[in-house]
Length: 613
Image (cartoon, rainbow, N blue to C red; front, side, top):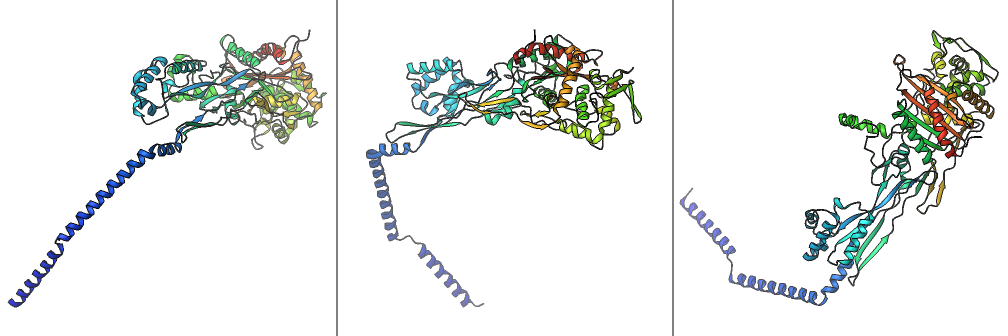
């Protein structure tokens, strides 16, 4: 390229640079405009400040009141009182007791140092808490109007009333008030623990009636709102809490207490056993009158296992073992555990065969001490044989051979049909949580041998509530009532709002069969294997049971007695089981019959049953 080209290019670039520099130049006119804008901005800002000052001076109080009148000052939950649980005689077994939580308003205290100091010192001194503890809450939550102290919860009314009087005398105590709350109390402690249940958290029942009737016992929380009106007066709006309904049980607390004490005495002073349980019911309506086992605990402290274990045993448990033992202690054996009942099942087999016209009152059986069923020889309890027995004496002497003969006459399908009719293998629907159904043979598993052994109460499992409910239907004319532990519901004023009407679920047998069985059961107590169950002055019918536990080689037994009073027209039925008595020879039902007799003698007068002269 030529020199001329380079000179022209350089000239062109210089012109571009001059133009750019000219555009960036801050002219005098621009400086004047910017200065004027700045002055105007300062004047406008000053005018705004003067205007705000004037509004605040002349109308600030009005605006402040208007703002405060739209702000919630307090918003407090008002707790309801959970309904009580009472026995059939209105004896309180569970009640919610009014307590108080101290509430602090740190923001109120922060407004006046002198009053803050006086209030903190008054609280610390009166309630015996450290000043630092109160100060920490007041300081850290200085903008709050609602703070609790863990140390000052669930205070009794006497203590709270005393502090309120102190507040009235000392006007420097401010920013303190008391919030109502409730704690659950069980006045009878262990009595009815497996029926009543307890509270796992605030107003949430666990186990027993506390759980199954939780929605009935719970009420509805209320609310209290506080706010400032336009005149700076604190106004309050209150929506009252609705207390829960109370539950009245079918249980008699006196009877329950006696039964529980007898169980404890049997365990501590008598033979003792792995498990002892008692259940009582009214055959005419399905009301449970008592229900207890040796698994007891204080409802006020349900995690305390000292009623069941020694301190050394508790200390030796790991966490898993403690949890398992607590669950076992809390569970209701009478409805939640199934077992082979033994000979207390025999009345059901006899009733089924009578209703099917397979046997009659005049039927006879020849017991040789053993019966060959298929390829197996199954022995009677009397290995030398009972000889020829009529039906009455077959039950009185608890002859296994006769019952096997009857069971084989029923055959598989009818045996299964009546098992279901009596309510076995299914939940009764009792109004308590944790019920189990037990295990029965299916049509496939019920072969001839199993049918024979099932006829006298082996190889199938039942619960106490199933056995007693079915037994009540056998002795009351055939009406199977749904068992229940609640009699009525009362509102917070004590007025009855619901009565639990006895429910006949089904018909299990005829009146003729029922009448015959009552006669047989009375003979069994008066002259047969259940004679130790006699109580002077009472007509009692009943049947003993001795169930061989698995494995058979272990030689462990569950002995039992099931009976009714008076035998001719029963008003009370009782069922007692003793699992593995702590004796060398466990297979004696006498342990259960004597125990049942002792209980009946003490409790029957409480149930309106008096001995004849």
